[in-house]
Length: 239
Ligand SMILES: Nc1ncnc2c1ncn2[C@@H]1O[C@H](COP(=O)(O)OP(=O)(O)OP(=O)(O)O)[C@@H](O)[C@H]1O
Image (tube, rainbow, N blue to C red; front, side, top):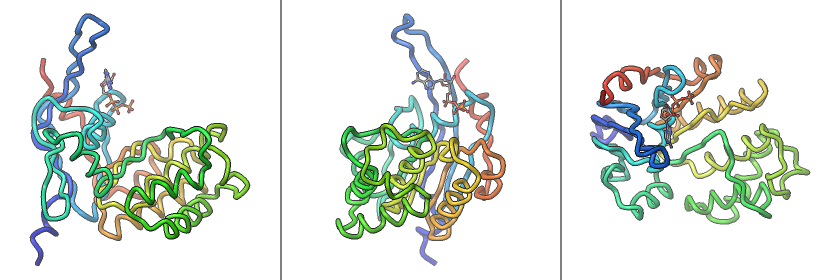
């Protein structure tokens, strides 16, 4: 058996995070300490715990948006392992191109770029040839029921649910081995939630490692292979 199959795709080891509020006289806000969590290929680990417990912060640290104060965040990148906690910005950007996708609930809109191109561009950035990226963008947008009349319009004026579907297509088009999902179904109706559940399950069946936050109980039950309550990490934060 290939030992890489058994090793995690993503692993938090003894991770701690305290926010320092510089505009509030440097007030320290400890969020978590001693966070240990491993996500293997083919798993969909769902983060649980009350609002403010640190679920989104864990995802943002794994994506390199937030620094962690202590510990390691190990990402398997092909044959090597990269510690996001100590990686250079250049290494983090390379990981985002090759290895990790992050879907938040909000689309960062690019002015004047149409929805189809927003999605296709994400595919090209992930290494897909232009024609495949375009075809796959169209396939995803139609699967996600985004009306074709909207495909060439910039998503700035789209409804919350329409923007979220463009965002999901953007995050899924490149099929990277690790997928971070921060409430990707928050503004969706039942029909589109079901489509997203199918897309997530397909990525999981293909061997991707998924780590996500889903407040919707039905979605959570449909996709989770394991739920990890982050309250334990919050309890180990600095006093
Ligand atoms: N950029 C930031 N600056 C300061 N504090 C922050 C920042 N981001 C998060 N926090 C604080 O860290 C704590 C954890 O926030 P986080 O968003 O990770 O929680 P969560 O479990 O995802 O919550 P929710 O379920 O409400 O989305 C909160 O108290 C929040 O106020």
